[in-house]
Structures are given as structure tokens and as C-alpha cells.
Length: 402
Ligand SMILES: [Zn+2]
Image 1 (tube, rainbow, N blue to C red):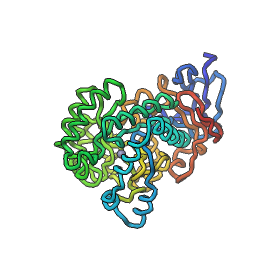
Image 2: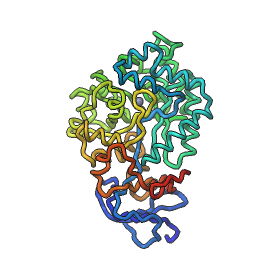
Image 3: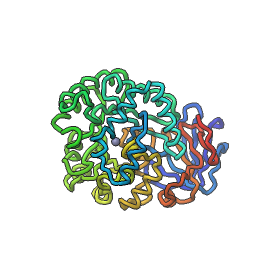
């Protein structure tokens, strides 16, 4: 036992049970796994003083592997142009598709790695990453291979999602059903190569109808993969109830969810993943009714939706600020949404999102003493010490890297 590293957490740490305790987290340095908490007789390697200690944050919805940027669209939207105006002129997802198709796998890896550094520096240790900017078999597989390399490189966890059903590519214009059939045929290959754990579909009148999605849903489950949906984003399309009935692991966005949809999610194991950064950044759509969802018993996660168009937002603490300010969530609900519930949205609650024995040593020491300070410090990076998989990547506010 004397070989173990030991984090003295004199402040509160939050475990799976949501109980707050003062104590010590002990990490096996060989495996990066927590082996005990509550012990006090081991050498200290990081004294936290009076600071808040939490599990590393879980960002369960990002699109961070992409090439190019859309800064000009950001300023156009701010001046009043709509997302639809911009898309009609060749902007939006298809513009990122063009840049991503032109990029090599190596370039996508480097671009993704730089973004993961920013996330980790702000306290995020588990990151879901979707494909969906290639939109051909070849380019989707290229994106997924880049994500796999990021997963091997990153000291935290990267979880891959295939999202060919992100937009109808120009080659399939007017033939969304045919394109989805093509996507469904690729899923077995992706599963066989271990390139993704999840499949995600943008279910929306602007993207894909539920009827057209059936083949993708079937192929997902046939291949043993898990399902996520972008749903009920701008209005009530009935996607929440439909997805909960299918056993989707999460349904994301939900700005337009109906009371029936809320009831369906509350009575299911499906996680409601809310993305207030997208409303903030794109000023399009509505903030999801988080209060009603929480009060009904839904499991609510928060994520950044990091992407170059509608949510160029990297910081989960900033997302917590928005959730508190605009959706009425408490600080504890915000933290749960970015830890244990984010882990559930990825099916990884046995591994990340809490500081219990047997879980990964993904830990953040924050430069504050109370949990309610975290959403309150809008835009500040309070992550003082960051440990990912037992490795200290940031100490005393200084980035060490990995
Ligand atoms: Zn998204």
C-alpha cells in the first residue's frame, strides 16, 4: 500500500452516492484506478488545502474533430443572419464537411488533440466525440480513425460516436432515405473495427425523419452498438418518447420537448442531455425546460456540443453557468449533470463520474472552496489541478501536458 499515490482532499469530494465527505483518495499509479477513499496513512502527493475536489468532468456530446472554422458565420448571426440563410449560401455543416474531407487523418488528429488540451485544461477528463463531417464512407472512417488515435493518446477517456446521419451530403440531395440506408450499411464495418461505441442521428424536419431512420436504428442494435439521438431541438417532434421507447442511451438538445416527452424520459433509463451552450452561442432555438425535467425525475446531463458552427464552446463550467442562469439548475444539479449523469449518457458510470474505488482517477481540484462558486465564476477557468487516469496534467494552475 505504501506505493500508492494519495490525494489529500480536505474539502468535499463527490462520490456516486452524491454524499459529500472529507477524506483521501488513493490511486494505484500503475493502473490509474482509485483503490480506496477515506484512508489517511499514505504519502501525500497533492495537498488540496481547503479547495473543492470533484471527479473530472464528463463532456458527453462534442463534434470536436473537424477542419476549418466558421468565425465569419458567428459574426453574421450576431448581426441577424439566420442559420438557414447561411446554410443556403453554402455555410453550415456542409462547409465544415468540405474542409474535413480535404484534411488528412493526421491533420484531423492534430486539430482534435489541440481541442482536447483546452478541454482538459478546464477540467474535462472524459469526452465523447462524433464523426459526421465526412459524410462519405471514406471520410467518416477517416474521422473515426482520427478519434481512435485521440482515444489512445488522451490520458482521460475519449468515446467515439458514428454520426453519418448528421446532414444529407450534396451527393445525396433529395434522397435522405437512400443516404441513411448507405449509413446503415457502414455500421457493421465500424463495429467490427471497434471504431465507435455509439451511433447518433440528427432527427429533425431539417435533417432526417423518424421513418427514414429505422434502418440506422436497426443496424446499430444489430451491430451491438448503442444509440444516441439529436432530438426535439427546435420543436416537439415526438423524438424524446420515440427514442426512450427504443432504449436510446441519451437524447440530446430537447429545447422543444413536450410534457409527454418529459414523462417518457422520466419513466425510462434514457438520459436527457441538455446543451445550453448551443442556445447561448447560436441564439437559435430554446433553452430546454430543465427544471420541469428534473422535477419529473429525468436524468439530466449537460454537455458543450463543441462544434465550429452552433456551439464553439469548450468549457463545461461555462455550460454550468448557463444552466444555472437560464435553466434554473442548482450547483449540485449542474455538477451531477457534468459528472455522474454525463457518465450515464456514455454508459460509463462504472468507470468515470465519481471518486469511488474501482473507478478511474480522473480528479479536479478547483480554485474555490464551495461547489456553488463553480457556476458563479462565469468564464473563469478555476481548474487548478487536473489528474486524468492517475496522471497529473496540471498542477497549481500550470499546464504540464501528457
Ligand atoms: Zn450535436
